[in-house]
Amino acid sequence: FSGACAGCGETPYLKLLTQLLGDRLIISNATGCSSIYGGNLPTTPYCKDSAGRGPAWANSLFEDNAEFGLGLRLAADRRHASARALLGKLASKLDADLVRELESAAPITEAEIAERRAQVAQLKVALEDLAPTTPDAERLLHIADDLVKKSVWIVGGDGWAYDIGYGGLDHVLASGANVKILVLDTEVYSNTGGQSSKSTPMGAVAKFAAGGKPTQKKDLALLALHYGHVYVARVAFGAKDSQTLQALREAEAYDGPALVIAYSHCIAHGYNLARGLDQQKLAVDTGYWPLFRHDPRRVEKGEPALTLDSAAPKLPLEKFTANETRFGMLAAMAPRRAEELAAAGQAALKTRYELYKHLATPSTTNTPPATI
Image 1: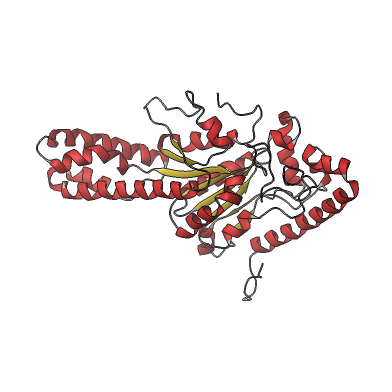
Image 2: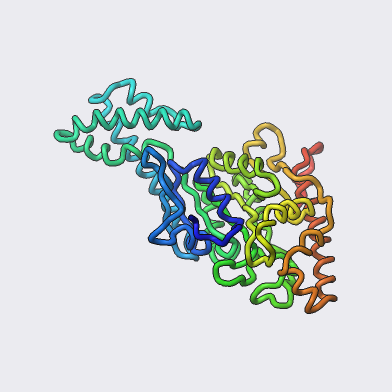
């Protein structure tokens, strides 16, 4: 009941995210397709489990969603710190073993999180007895649930992430805060009719790029991984669903900013979306959308941070572009220009893959890494 277009390429990623983290998930959603089908009041596709827990979802403005999400992260951290401080003040009036467990390291696995929730429930029972005579106990009772880990995700499309909200997104990545970003990349401003964005590939036709976009797609992933401290993944559900699952799990577990860029087929691409997952696989097989994970934790093991999860391109780019009207339109209108842009796009894919391959190769010398 999401209300998205039939065959939408965005919704599977959000469904998976809620299946993994829904009982502790906080979403800051940029205006766009995901905010329309996500907040299609009076209905909503987000729901709660049998325990009454589910995603907390809010839609901010198109231009400040990243900052809004960072604020949610800072607020969650502040509430957690306040709860820990109150717990310390009340320690002498509470069970010593329970306090020690609650003050231990933050839970990581699902079993540990479930155990922490049980401990919080036990704490609440004790606080209810203390609350009438102890103001600190009453305050802690209101925020005791913040002793359980919260997962904050900033969600939006490429129009937000690559264009209008990029300054804020870059600020969040640079901050080092433990906040996650999921970019549902349709390569076009889908919600407002298919305008060209910085994510739109070379040669594609869109509003404001009627003659085919003359420049290459902005490589948001490459820009982010150069920070060094950011977890970055590029995923495509239809090409390798296990890699998508692994990336989301690693991003969540990473103690710092994480960016997951998810290829999302769209009705604006101009083909039957029943073939959407097949087209995603072609995007990977042609090298149009290489899959990888950049995990800074690997460096500590003496390994390259970047892991390529897809093989070298094994099909020509035209196998992918031939199926989509956004590329075919240009061939019909201006065949020569279409050929020129297609050739330039094919060459760019080869160059980009070689760059990623270089970054994923263990260094055998002491020479500094190549500059981009």
